Image (cartoon, rainbow, N blue to C red; front, side, top):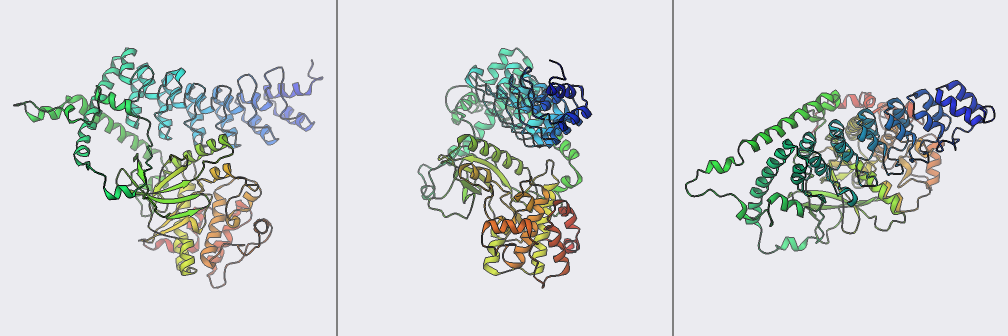
Length: 634
């Protein structure tokens, strides 16, 4: 069939040639941009364009409505899969920017990130991870992206995944021998990957169907890997054995009264490590037995026992410390000046002393919640690290759509991992996620003392302008920090009820829109909007994507709430009336008692067009806040 007889064939040939002018003309003539080449695995023009590194062609097709997530019928690959496989970086970036599904799966349940990991396409991998690609998805045999890195010995890509908090101990399916990345690295004798994974916290005692890591390394015949694991196992065995003695001696014989008051529910966040403990001991029986500790014989100098297993263990520790220091130096060099200041300035700094490495936790029986909202109930919990934390419990057990719920939970886990890396004095410290015995989703954070701004407004009335300026400056500082992170972080739910004031006078942003996706997956919600719409920017109500400028709109509404006791348009009689007013009516004005600078600040934040709103950095330099920044904080 000739091109003249088949205009769609002409479109595909023009795409293959990179002839943008001809493609544009054919689209204008009415050739569907999402037509499929039935003779060639149902390729779409966009998928065909992804084979070549032609960014202009990709952008042209996207601009005219090309479906981003269509797949061909041979392998089930999308355009983003093809770009990732071919290492077409500009095409991949254009697709990601256009919101292509970064976790799309082909017929083998393989994602674009897995393709990059298998081929060591580092730059596209970085773009996918910045866009939120899930590091822990598994293909048909249970391989994650980290498994592919290990299989092909791609050390740098593995470092990248570790940096983005990929889970280290995911096991493949039985047909793939239940390998973790660590056991797979041992089987293949990949010494540097073994060092990377062990330093990152991989469970070295987990076993696959073929044995533990040391046994597998011996099968590989790589003596360097065998020697490394031999020393590593001895080191861990000594550390775990010596650490077990105080616990053994101090454990009470009977349960205390305080223990009987606590909930019987305890949640383990780690995998089953029974096999690991046995491997650590090197023999049957628990590693906590004091009989397994080496005791000096009569007349033997004590220092000989303390030096066991000689210099190898000390050298291993020194190597790990040096590698950790080098990684920290590299991270500091890669950070922007604003991000580097996160560890030292008066504005910035993480909460000291809070550990997210706890494995069990308890909520006191009949304890009242310390907070509640649309997305869950918050309790105080006590961990096995002897610290109090806050835990938000999101009930998800009665989902009508299990697959949608599973994806929603995966996205929330990924969001909390991202938030746990934030380091700013005005941002709540996020710790980890978990599931309890009822299947509820749990979000752990630092435990704050104080009250929300909405609680303060309810109890004490509206704030003075000095208070508004002080709190707004701290909120802006936090927004400036998250909006300039790499990748940027958006709050998505800024309002007075999600802003805490500690007893020391420090503002803390909380919630960050977490658990919304889980809630919408278990409840019918025709508008897609959860909670009060008074703080939602008009572009969101219009169906556009959330941006940093949407947070700025919510900041303006929060400022209005601090000044008046209620958000803008709260007087409307219905949700629909509120949304109509936001999109079509002028925003309510601030009370006349406030200064011209405060009026100007509010008006700038609630511009209908996002491009007209200032950034958080620009707001910090506004006349209203610039003077406040000279004040010394508590």
